[in-house]
Amino acid sequence: MPPSASPVVAPPAVAPVQAAGASTAKAPVPAVSMAATAAVATARANLENALRRAFAGGKPGAQQVRDDLVAAGFAAADVQVTAGRTPTGLEADAVEVGVEQGGDCLIAQVRSGEVSVTVLPVLADGRCLVGAAGP
Image (cartoon, rainbow, N blue to C red; front, top):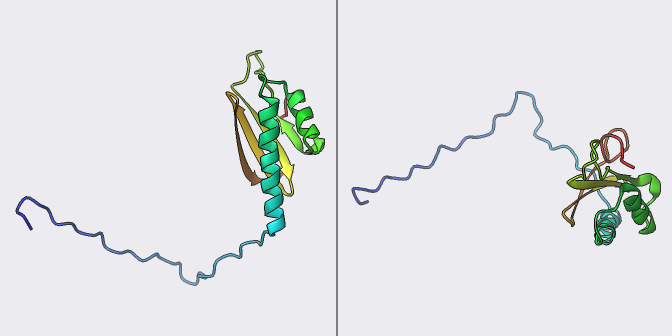
């Protein structure tokens, strides 16, 4: 080794510590049927497409977004949309949408015309968004 080079020393290997009497067995992972996974993926794509169409001409109100999603096949009772205006009357930077679909929540955000959708678990109260949905 050249005199100017420092030797590379690997850190010592550390084994994970397990509490006395603790089980090493992993919790069972619930089985998700392929049909359910495919249904959520299809619903996610439908939600993205419906929101892109709804926001193509500008920023519609919450009721119009809800109506567009119902027209796209989502059940009205499963759709939540945040207000498009703040309490002071300013336009909201983003609109969030929650749609319950087969025990999951499709959560979408529309900001500057861009749609982003993710799948999350349903909240404890059975809804997808926290707070009051906007008109």
